[in-house]
Every structure is written in structure tokens, then in C-alpha cells.
Length: 161
Image (cartoon, rainbow, N blue to C red; front, side, top):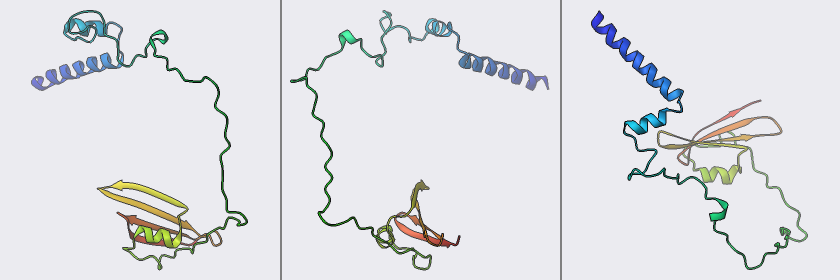
């Protein structure tokens, strides 16, 4: 029994001390690791500290880019072109019933027939692209959920409110 307890107890103590050193890093820890054999604080020649490549250069060393003319650009209004005399038309699509959506139908055919869904959820699982299209009939409150796997309809279900 003692042959098992003492090594296990020693291992637990070593793990607790090592975890404590990593969680509560002391200010002396980098110095100790550098003395033991790490070269984090000095370069390979044993010289002064290296500067981090992530430190931004001081403003006096920064390269200044000059522009040909230092005047403000005039503000331009965005141009929206609408056909003259034609009001914007709202395209209405039929509500998809589960019986109308056949398994194996391509996603592009569903979107062309029933229009864009109210909600589209996309995810990947086991190397397959899974999509769920949710269509809602605003007048009756019914919802149709169409499951699409790799671009083809897998199933469709219509729920009543």
C-alpha cells in the first residue's frame, strides 16, 4: 500500500506546485527560467534584450507619407437610380407546403420558386453542408421548415400556429 500512496502523493504535490507557478506567475519567474537555460531575455549572442516585433515604432522613427495636395476631398452624395415613372414592385411568392417540396429538389429551385426564406440557418457537420430554410405565412401563422443537405432538399415540415 505504501508503494502506491507515496508516489501518488508526490505526483499530486508536484502538479499543484507547477500549476501554482503557472497560474500565479511571480515577477522572479522569468529571471529564474532565463538563468536555468532559457534565452528568452537575451539574443543568441548573449547581448541586450531583443525588441519584440509587435512593438510599434516610435513616432519620430515612423515613415511619413506625403500627399500631393493637402486639401479635403469634396463630399459626394450617393446616387440612387430608380426607373422614372415606375414604382418599386413587391414580388410575392407562394407559401411552401411540405407536400409541395419534394426530397432531392435543388436549393436553387426552392429559392426561385418560393423566394428567399425568412430565416436561413447554415452549418457543417460530418463533412456535409446543412441548411434550414424557415418560411412563415404571415396571414395564418403557419411555418414550413425545409432541411437542405449539400444543396438538395432532405425533408420539409409544415407547422400550424
